[in-house]
Length: 183
Image 1 (spheres, rainbow, N blue to C red):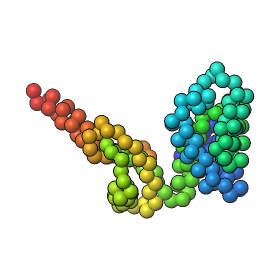
Image 2: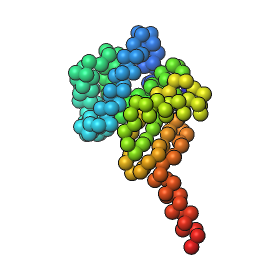
Image 3: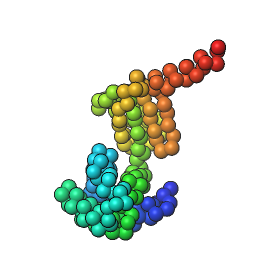
Image 4: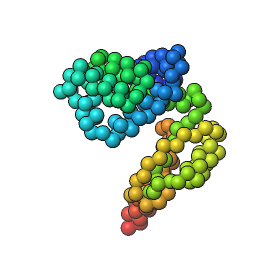
């Protein structure tokens, strides 16, 4: 996997190869997207995964039960169970990110995180995709949107390590800093 190093990268690479061999990449992508969403929104699951007070065996059985109930792919269930058994479940977020990034890269996609002051409807999302496509030359754009009402207006777009902040909040902050220098 390009650009991935360390333990998380090795786990993600191993899972990718297994998924490729079993022709289950798209199913694992769906499983991981669901698990990532669950991790972001469920404090109990975060506690289960990151608490050193929870034993490896409890983590393993719990994550297997959760994924089984979610009707996850058998490979996803076994993989996460193995992570828990080996005391590596705390790496799951990084592994998911590396795995999903690699799948996107192979599919010729780039992922763009867009933060706006309001929920973007489909036509607005399409306009953002077109603008990103023109700027990058890449046709397949996968948008991940979020809302931050404190931005007042405008957008923040993150693509990999690059960020374009065109929010009114940032412009006002810059203006405030510039005005301090006038006195």
